[in-house]
Image 1: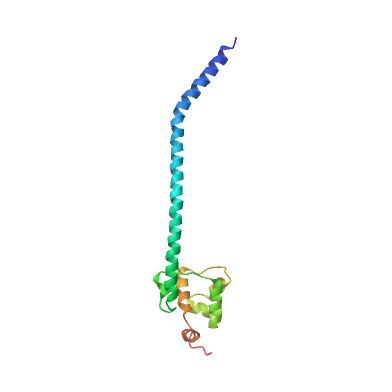
Image 2: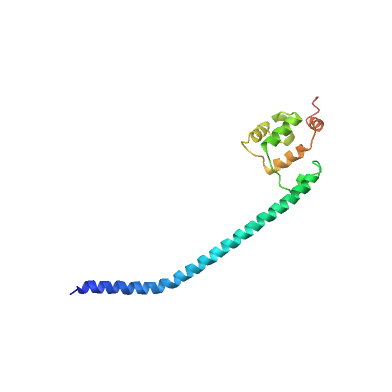
Length: 153
């Protein structure tokens, strides 16, 4: 004959599991419902992000085409269009103008060391500095020499 203590312990365990299951079952259903909602929202977010990316590409191309059709000196870069920076473009501009890093820095309103760091891709210019660099793109050698104080060629 089994021990009464073992039988009681088994019965108490069985009843406590049954009671706990009755409380936990609705919680499991709620969690499953919330997981389905979250998955649906993630799919919706992914679709919206994809649509936004397509719209950005479409508007970026049309804005780039409009910016490319305007001349360099008419302020097209001042209209809030995003400015980008490439170190090799800065190097080629500086060499095309025949300027040292120090001279180019004076034109851009920065130090020669900043120009060197930009060209060597150690740092990138701030947004305000990008605007100044964009204005320098349309200048020729004569205009630059005038701005630097009439240095003879």
